[in-house]
Image 1: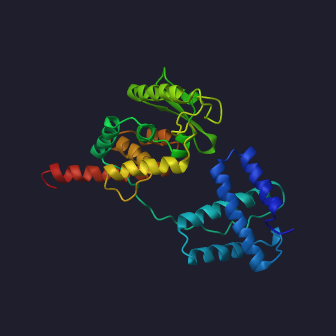
Image 2: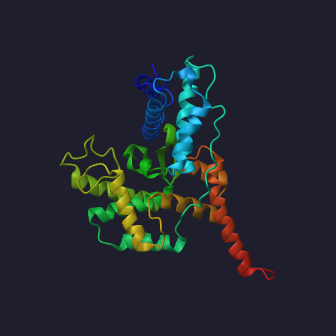
Image 3: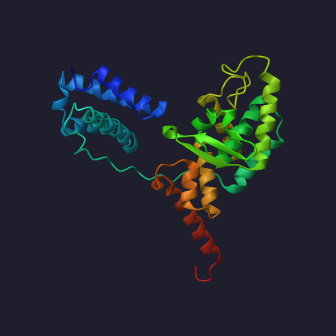
Length: 307
């Protein structure tokens, strides 16, 4: 049997899904990476056994990918997939030493998060509030306001169910990466907006049986009453960000960055921002401190006599 046979890969993916509770997105990514590596092994080495696997073979595959222009971030994801796979093989007793021991991950180029200025954000939300409430505009308003007010990932918002909303306490329970739960406090104004949206949704779709699941479970739905899907949300947010900002990047994630940056600029504690974003490591949140430092530099230059 080859080092990365289909049954081996499937067994590993099942382990990630049922025991480790990895997200569907991560599992699909790992599956793609492992199958690509398996195809490389077949082409280059034929039927190589698991115990014959070495760091030199893995480095050769990664070097080829780098030559094709793959970024450090993409290479690191593939390294992560292989590292997890061989760690699983160690755990099940199929390997004694992982070939990943001598594989060093390349450093990711640090990119500062793209975010909107506070005035731009206010104008965007006001323009949506003042616009005619056809269903698509209403969805754009809900998507943008919720993303900016909570810092949720777009996948978290698309899958948000009504039962995760606590109207009495003005908070939302979010299911994040690795099925980790976190609580995000929200304003009474946002709660009212959500309640108004829910009321309209029930009036519009309750008799049409078009939710595709128990009526009212999913918070956001399209104008056809179906669950909002990623491309729908992406295009809607992109359109309105394009109308209201001069940013080159106009994805839903910009609103998550904007949420975090505005909190940091307002003096929020870094650990608190980490918890609100659902980051597993403080290092992921620290990127937002740069924007705060830049703001302090501008204040210093404008106001200090010796600047």
